[in-house]
Length: 318
Image 1 (cartoon, rainbow, N blue to C red):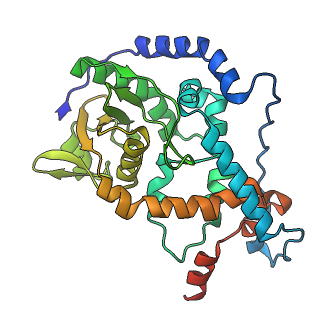
Image 2 (image 1 turned 90 degrees about the vertical axis):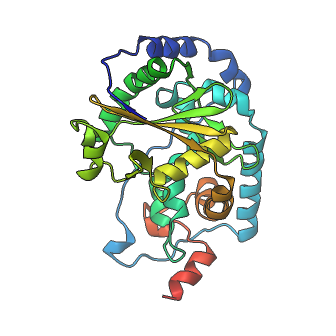
Protein backbone atom coordinates (compact mmCIF):
# COMPACT_ATOMS: atom_id res chain seq x y z
CA UNK A 1 0.00 0.00 0.00
CA UNK A 2 1.45 3.34 -1.07
CA UNK A 3 0.44 6.74 0.29
CA UNK A 4 1.60 10.32 0.24
CA UNK A 5 3.61 11.28 3.30
CA UNK A 6 2.53 14.30 5.40
CA UNK A 7 5.11 16.26 7.37
CA UNK A 8 4.81 14.74 10.88
CA UNK A 9 7.14 15.13 13.84
CA UNK A 10 8.17 12.40 16.21
CA UNK A 11 7.61 13.98 19.64
CA UNK A 12 5.98 10.84 20.98
CA UNK A 13 8.98 8.81 19.87
CA UNK A 14 11.43 11.08 21.70
CA UNK A 15 9.20 11.07 24.78
CA UNK A 16 9.25 7.28 24.80
CA UNK A 17 13.04 7.25 24.49
CA UNK A 18 13.36 9.56 27.51
CA UNK A 19 10.96 7.43 29.54
CA UNK A 20 12.87 4.27 28.71
CA UNK A 21 16.19 5.91 29.63
CA UNK A 22 14.86 6.79 33.09
CA UNK A 23 13.54 3.28 33.80
CA UNK A 24 16.39 0.95 32.86
CA UNK A 25 18.60 1.18 35.96
CA UNK A 26 17.04 -1.63 38.00
CA UNK A 27 16.86 -4.03 35.08
CA UNK A 28 20.50 -3.35 34.20
CA UNK A 29 21.59 -4.13 37.76
CA UNK A 30 19.67 -7.38 37.72
CA UNK A 31 20.95 -8.44 34.32
CA UNK A 32 24.60 -7.47 34.63
CA UNK A 33 25.11 -8.13 38.37
CA UNK A 34 25.09 -5.06 40.61
CA UNK A 35 28.51 -4.00 41.83
CA UNK A 36 30.42 -6.06 39.28
CA UNK A 37 33.09 -4.48 37.16
CA UNK A 38 32.17 -3.77 33.58
CA UNK A 39 34.62 -4.72 30.91
CA UNK A 40 36.22 -1.83 29.09
CA UNK A 41 35.35 -1.78 25.40
CA UNK A 42 37.99 -3.28 23.18
CA UNK A 43 39.94 -0.68 21.27
CA UNK A 44 39.69 -1.32 17.55
CA UNK A 45 42.86 -1.19 15.48
CA UNK A 46 43.58 -1.66 11.85
CA UNK A 47 46.97 -2.96 10.91
CA UNK A 48 48.97 -4.62 8.17
CA UNK A 49 47.58 -7.77 6.63
CA UNK A 50 49.18 -10.87 5.26
CA UNK A 51 48.45 -9.59 1.77
CA UNK A 52 51.46 -7.30 2.14
CA UNK A 53 53.78 -10.24 2.62
CA UNK A 54 53.92 -13.79 3.88
CA UNK A 55 53.03 -13.97 7.55
CA UNK A 56 54.79 -16.40 9.86
CA UNK A 57 52.57 -19.00 11.54
CA UNK A 58 51.01 -17.70 14.74
CA UNK A 59 52.54 -19.09 17.93
CA UNK A 60 50.88 -19.91 21.25
CA UNK A 61 47.57 -21.25 19.95
CA UNK A 62 45.38 -23.06 22.45
CA UNK A 63 44.47 -26.69 21.88
CA UNK A 64 41.27 -27.74 20.14
CA UNK A 65 39.98 -29.15 23.43
CA UNK A 66 40.59 -25.87 25.25
CA UNK A 67 38.85 -23.98 22.47
CA UNK A 68 35.84 -26.29 22.73
CA UNK A 69 35.67 -25.67 26.48
CA UNK A 70 35.79 -21.90 25.98
CA UNK A 71 33.01 -22.10 23.40
CA UNK A 72 30.88 -24.29 25.64
CA UNK A 73 31.28 -21.96 28.63
CA UNK A 74 30.46 -18.89 26.55
CA UNK A 75 27.31 -20.47 25.15
CA UNK A 76 26.29 -21.43 28.67
CA UNK A 77 26.57 -17.78 29.73
CA UNK A 78 24.42 -16.67 26.80
CA UNK A 79 21.79 -19.27 27.63
CA UNK A 80 21.59 -18.01 31.21
CA UNK A 81 20.83 -14.40 30.23
CA UNK A 82 17.28 -13.32 31.04
CA UNK A 83 15.81 -12.58 27.61
CA UNK A 84 13.11 -10.21 28.89
CA UNK A 85 15.54 -8.13 30.95
CA UNK A 86 18.00 -7.93 28.06
CA UNK A 87 15.31 -6.67 25.70
CA UNK A 88 14.19 -4.07 28.25
CA UNK A 89 17.59 -2.56 29.06
CA UNK A 90 18.56 -2.24 25.39
CA UNK A 91 15.51 -0.28 24.22
CA UNK A 92 17.62 2.80 23.62
CA UNK A 93 19.25 0.73 20.87
CA UNK A 94 22.22 2.59 19.36
CA UNK A 95 22.24 5.03 22.31
CA UNK A 96 22.76 2.11 24.71
CA UNK A 97 26.20 0.69 25.48
CA UNK A 98 24.53 -2.55 26.54
CA UNK A 99 22.89 -2.84 23.13
CA UNK A 100 26.26 -2.52 21.38
CA UNK A 101 28.04 -4.88 23.78
CA UNK A 102 25.40 -7.61 23.69
CA UNK A 103 25.12 -7.51 19.89
CA UNK A 104 28.86 -8.15 19.63
CA UNK A 105 28.35 -11.50 21.36
CA UNK A 106 25.73 -12.63 18.91
CA UNK A 107 24.82 -12.85 15.26
CA UNK A 108 22.15 -10.27 14.44
CA UNK A 109 19.41 -10.36 11.82
CA UNK A 110 20.82 -7.53 9.71
CA UNK A 111 23.71 -9.87 8.82
CA UNK A 112 21.67 -13.00 8.18
CA UNK A 113 21.29 -12.46 4.43
CA UNK A 114 24.97 -12.03 3.67
CA UNK A 115 25.90 -15.06 5.75
CA UNK A 116 23.20 -17.33 4.34
CA UNK A 117 24.27 -16.49 0.80
CA UNK A 118 28.00 -16.98 1.34
CA UNK A 119 29.55 -19.58 -0.94
CA UNK A 120 30.90 -22.73 0.67
CA UNK A 121 34.40 -21.94 -0.61
CA UNK A 122 34.44 -18.35 0.67
CA UNK A 123 36.69 -17.62 3.65
CA UNK A 124 34.82 -16.31 6.68
CA UNK A 125 37.74 -14.15 7.85
CA UNK A 126 36.64 -10.87 6.31
CA UNK A 127 33.10 -11.25 7.61
CA UNK A 128 34.30 -12.10 11.13
CA UNK A 129 36.62 -9.09 11.03
CA UNK A 130 33.75 -6.89 9.89
CA UNK A 131 31.46 -8.10 12.68
CA UNK A 132 33.97 -7.84 15.52
CA UNK A 133 36.59 -5.26 14.64
CA UNK A 134 35.59 -2.91 11.85
CA UNK A 135 35.19 0.63 13.28
CA UNK A 136 31.67 2.04 13.26
CA UNK A 137 31.47 4.58 10.46
CA UNK A 138 28.55 6.68 9.32
CA UNK A 139 27.85 7.77 5.77
CA UNK A 140 25.23 10.20 4.50
CA UNK A 141 22.90 7.30 3.65
CA UNK A 142 23.06 5.90 7.18
CA UNK A 143 22.71 9.33 8.80
CA UNK A 144 19.69 10.06 6.63
CA UNK A 145 18.06 6.77 7.59
CA UNK A 146 18.58 7.40 11.31
CA UNK A 147 17.13 10.91 11.06
CA UNK A 148 14.08 9.81 9.06
CA UNK A 149 13.16 6.69 11.04
CA UNK A 150 11.24 8.51 13.84
CA UNK A 151 9.25 10.40 11.22
CA UNK A 152 8.46 7.17 9.40
CA UNK A 153 7.34 5.51 12.62
CA UNK A 154 5.11 8.44 13.59
CA UNK A 155 3.59 8.53 10.10
CA UNK A 156 2.86 4.80 10.23
CA UNK A 157 1.13 5.18 13.60
CA UNK A 158 -1.02 8.01 12.28
CA UNK A 159 -1.81 6.31 8.98
CA UNK A 160 -2.97 3.03 10.53
CA UNK A 161 -4.09 4.33 13.93
CA UNK A 162 -1.83 1.92 15.82
CA UNK A 163 0.77 2.22 18.58
CA UNK A 164 4.31 1.10 17.82
CA UNK A 165 6.21 -0.09 20.90
CA UNK A 166 9.92 0.70 20.87
CA UNK A 167 11.90 -2.45 21.63
CA UNK A 168 15.41 -3.63 22.40
CA UNK A 169 17.50 -6.66 21.53
CA UNK A 170 15.63 -9.96 21.26
CA UNK A 171 17.41 -13.32 21.50
CA UNK A 172 16.12 -16.54 20.01
CA UNK A 173 14.65 -18.94 22.58
CA UNK A 174 16.39 -21.96 21.06
CA UNK A 175 19.59 -20.37 19.73
CA UNK A 176 20.58 -17.66 22.22
CA UNK A 177 23.39 -16.46 19.94
CA UNK A 178 20.92 -15.31 17.25
CA UNK A 179 19.46 -11.86 17.91
CA UNK A 180 17.38 -9.11 16.34
CA UNK A 181 16.17 -5.57 17.01
CA UNK A 182 13.06 -4.71 14.98
CA UNK A 183 12.15 -1.06 14.51
CA UNK A 184 9.09 -1.63 16.69
CA UNK A 185 6.40 -4.00 17.93
CA UNK A 186 2.75 -3.79 16.92
CA UNK A 187 0.21 -5.51 19.13
CA UNK A 188 1.01 -9.08 20.14
CA UNK A 189 1.77 -10.59 16.75
CA UNK A 190 3.54 -8.09 14.48
CA UNK A 191 6.77 -6.13 14.10
CA UNK A 192 7.79 -3.05 12.14
CA UNK A 193 10.78 -2.73 9.84
CA UNK A 194 11.50 0.68 8.31
CA UNK A 195 13.71 1.61 5.37
CA UNK A 196 14.29 5.24 4.43
CA UNK A 197 16.26 4.99 1.17
CA UNK A 198 18.50 7.97 0.53
CA UNK A 199 18.66 7.13 -3.18
CA UNK A 200 14.87 7.44 -3.51
CA UNK A 201 14.35 10.50 -1.30
CA UNK A 202 13.48 12.74 -4.25
CA UNK A 203 11.45 10.20 -6.21
CA UNK A 204 7.82 11.05 -6.91
CA UNK A 205 6.39 7.57 -6.37
CA UNK A 206 7.27 3.91 -5.88
CA UNK A 207 7.03 2.98 -9.56
CA UNK A 208 9.50 5.69 -10.54
CA UNK A 209 11.87 4.59 -7.77
CA UNK A 210 11.89 0.99 -9.04
CA UNK A 211 12.11 1.89 -12.73
CA UNK A 212 15.00 4.26 -12.04
CA UNK A 213 16.73 1.50 -10.02
CA UNK A 214 16.63 3.51 -6.81
CA UNK A 215 15.21 0.49 -4.95
CA UNK A 216 17.30 -2.52 -5.96
CA UNK A 217 15.60 -4.67 -3.33
CA UNK A 218 12.05 -4.26 -4.66
CA UNK A 219 10.05 -5.10 -7.76
CA UNK A 220 6.57 -4.22 -8.99
CA UNK A 221 4.25 -7.25 -8.95
CA UNK A 222 0.60 -6.86 -9.94
CA UNK A 223 0.94 -3.14 -9.45
CA UNK A 224 2.28 -3.52 -5.89
CA UNK A 225 5.76 -2.74 -4.57
CA UNK A 226 7.19 -6.04 -3.32
CA UNK A 227 10.37 -6.93 -1.44
CA UNK A 228 12.50 -9.46 -3.33
CA UNK A 229 12.80 -12.75 -1.46
CA UNK A 230 16.44 -13.18 -2.46
CA UNK A 231 17.46 -9.84 -0.94
CA UNK A 232 19.15 -9.58 2.45
CA UNK A 233 16.26 -7.48 3.79
CA UNK A 234 13.91 -10.45 3.37
CA UNK A 235 16.32 -12.69 5.28
CA UNK A 236 16.50 -9.99 7.96
CA UNK A 237 12.72 -9.86 8.31
CA UNK A 238 12.25 -13.65 8.44
CA UNK A 239 14.97 -13.76 11.12
CA UNK A 240 13.32 -10.98 13.12
CA UNK A 241 9.95 -12.75 13.01
CA UNK A 242 11.47 -16.05 14.09
CA UNK A 243 13.45 -14.52 16.97
CA UNK A 244 10.60 -12.33 18.27
CA UNK A 245 8.14 -15.22 17.81
CA UNK A 246 5.74 -13.07 15.79
CA UNK A 247 3.78 -13.76 12.62
CA UNK A 248 3.73 -10.56 10.55
CA UNK A 249 6.12 -7.75 9.65
CA UNK A 250 4.96 -4.40 8.33
CA UNK A 251 7.76 -3.49 5.93
CA UNK A 252 7.66 0.28 5.45
CA UNK A 253 9.55 2.24 2.81
CA UNK A 254 9.32 5.92 3.72
CA UNK A 255 10.26 8.95 1.62
CA UNK A 256 9.22 12.61 1.85
CA UNK A 257 6.90 12.17 -1.16
CA UNK A 258 5.44 8.69 -0.69
CA UNK A 259 5.25 5.74 1.68
CA UNK A 260 4.76 2.05 0.91
CA UNK A 261 3.74 -0.66 3.38
CA UNK A 262 3.98 -4.38 2.66
CA UNK A 263 2.69 -6.96 5.14
CA UNK A 264 5.10 -9.92 5.15
CA UNK A 265 4.19 -13.20 6.83
CA UNK A 266 6.71 -15.43 8.61
CA UNK A 267 7.85 -18.33 6.42
CA UNK A 268 9.04 -21.24 8.55
CA UNK A 269 9.98 -23.33 5.51
CA UNK A 270 12.28 -20.53 4.32
CA UNK A 271 13.82 -20.33 7.80
CA UNK A 272 14.40 -24.08 8.06
CA UNK A 273 15.62 -24.73 4.52
CA UNK A 274 17.63 -21.59 3.71
CA UNK A 275 18.70 -19.98 6.96
CA UNK A 276 19.01 -21.71 10.32
CA UNK A 277 21.66 -24.34 9.51
CA UNK A 278 23.91 -21.80 7.78
CA UNK A 279 23.57 -19.32 10.64
CA UNK A 280 24.37 -21.95 13.26
CA UNK A 281 27.41 -23.16 11.33
CA UNK A 282 28.78 -19.65 10.81
CA UNK A 283 28.35 -18.61 14.42
CA UNK A 284 29.65 -21.80 16.04
CA UNK A 285 32.56 -22.43 13.67
CA UNK A 286 33.53 -18.95 12.43
CA UNK A 287 32.44 -16.19 14.80
CA UNK A 288 32.44 -17.88 18.21
CA UNK A 289 36.09 -19.06 18.10
CA UNK A 290 37.25 -15.47 17.53
CA UNK A 291 34.97 -14.20 20.32
CA UNK A 292 36.27 -16.61 22.96
CA UNK A 293 39.90 -16.77 21.78
CA UNK A 294 40.70 -13.68 19.68
CA UNK A 295 43.59 -14.11 17.26
CA UNK A 296 43.29 -10.95 15.19
CA UNK A 297 44.56 -8.70 17.99
CA UNK A 298 47.85 -10.56 18.31
CA UNK A 299 49.24 -9.12 15.07
CA UNK A 300 46.25 -7.29 13.57
CA UNK A 301 46.18 -9.64 10.60
CA UNK A 302 42.85 -10.83 9.25
CA UNK A 303 44.69 -13.91 8.00
CA UNK A 304 45.14 -14.98 11.64
CA UNK A 305 41.38 -15.32 12.10
CA UNK A 306 40.43 -18.98 11.91
CA UNK A 307 38.77 -20.55 8.90
CA UNK A 308 37.00 -23.77 9.96
CA UNK A 309 37.98 -27.07 8.36
CA UNK A 310 34.86 -27.30 6.20
CA UNK A 311 35.72 -23.98 4.53
CA UNK A 312 39.40 -24.89 4.11
CA UNK A 313 38.34 -28.13 2.44
CA UNK A 314 36.12 -26.28 -0.05
CA UNK A 315 38.84 -23.70 -0.78
CA UNK A 316 41.36 -26.47 -1.48
CA UNK A 317 38.93 -28.04 -3.95
CA UNK A 318 38.99 -24.94 -6.17
